[in-house]
Amino acid sequence: MGLPGLLGLLLLLHLSQINASRGILRSVAVGDAAKARDYCITYNSSWTTLPTTYLNATFYKMLNLSTVWLCSQSEVPSTGLQDKAVVVLPGNCSILEKASLAQKNNAKMLLLASKEGLIRISESRSNYQNLTIPIAYVRYGDIVSMAEVLGEDIAVTMYSPAFPLFDYSLLVIFLISVFTVALGGYWSGLSEMEDLRPSPTVHESEGQKKKDENVTFTPVTVILFVVICCVMLLLLYYFYNWLVYVIIAVFCLASAMSMFNCLSALIKIIPYGRCRVALYSRSAEVRLIFLAAFCIALSVTWAVFRNEDRWIWILQDILGIAFCLNFIKTLRMPNFKACVILLGLLLLYDVFFVFITPFFTKNGESIMVEVAAGPSGKSEKSGESYVEVPAESQATYEKLPVVIRVPRLEYSAMTLCDMPMSLLGFGDIIVPGLLVAYCKRFDVRSSSSSIYFISCTIAYAVGMVLTFVILMVMKMGQPALLYLVPCTLLTSSVIAWRRKEMKKFWNGGSYEIMEQTDNAVNEENIITGEAQEAP
Image (cartoon, rainbow, N blue to C red; front, top):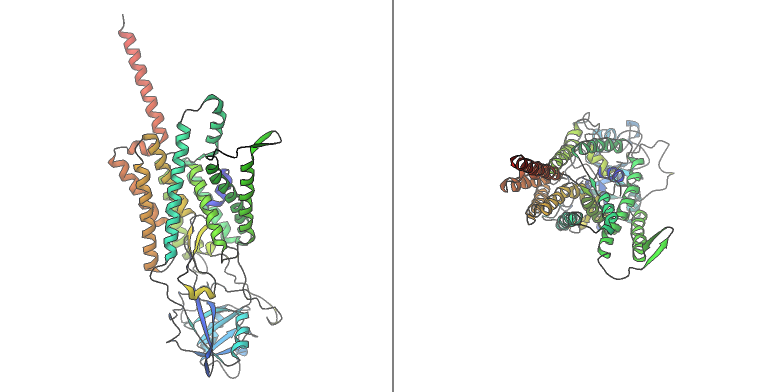
């Protein structure tokens, strides 16, 4: 695919893992502990710390006020809220105002019965520093179901099951990422070998076409590209609801073309089924026509079922791997200098939008997290009451399809909410993968026995392990480029320095041109000198 389409999608390809704050609402019938049900909730883990099990948690009697907003003292029932877990409707005023009023009336818990699905809680608490009451969103349909199953006299508590000591989904992500980077770099090296191989005159136009398929980044293009990334990320932050569909459309097109390029490279090796059919003034192999139809069908299937979390992640990962492979092979870095500029700027970009922007946003969330997690769903409804609106069990929000997703099967208790996923942004594969690909092409040109390629791939694997270790220690999403960029750049630099090839490695192809020019000038000087000495 062309450079404009690739630029349009790469801007968010290094979104890091975002951990949603999910919990469980344990409900029991008062007087009959055998009648119990669990329901999913969302809460802000930076505001509230929940126990890991309900066994030692305190249960509070639930008071269902889901016909009022609880925005003023007049909406507090005459019986009061003392020691109650209060259920109210979201909207009409902020959730912090509701929580402050509930806490003032000695309530022990505030549950927001949402008909818009489970919502992320992300508001600024600067004016509510003394607020300690636990706050959570629960589905309105679950509140209705709870009353039907358990009766009207219900006690509830909240808890959040602990994460397992080791998440095996991270191992799957590790294998996918290292495999993709290594294979993408190797494929780029094969393409370089084909470009260097002398071609017969008959196939000259075909060889020129292959070279035209590749896109080379110059240092100036790299800087311009990062500026475009910043602008597009800000546009997504402010206009997410519209631009998300543009990203989805670009991903469908790009992934279908990438899948075709990857599979056609394998099919062309097979010496069978090469019959061709005429299409207008051109001809095409029948097997490639069927392959194109297959790739389009895969992309369309993903687009139609993209919100089916139970199984669509498999198809998204397959399309994502193909996209990353094709990107690493197609986009070429001309030298190590361009790699340093690209990786360095994107590292600063990642760190700035993850760690610095929370100081400027109203809700204290980073722009990167906001865009990665999608709309918070804070829809302030107006009207007399929610009673007239049909209860929705769950609302689906569009997410950006720019991550490798693997379900966290170990975390089975949280499947009440959805299928928990471990995520890795495409950019955490592609950006270091471009350096790995450059190392492989440099090995091909300098005949260095793949030392740069192997070393950089190992460095990438080490960087991924370091990312996962820090992820498990800090228990929060990490910008993987923060660890991958230093590991790969430093390793490549050390190898070039030890082999005394830093100048050649730094300048890449331009160094070879200068070297050839110097040799030609020296040869010309020698010939001229010999001619002058001749009688």
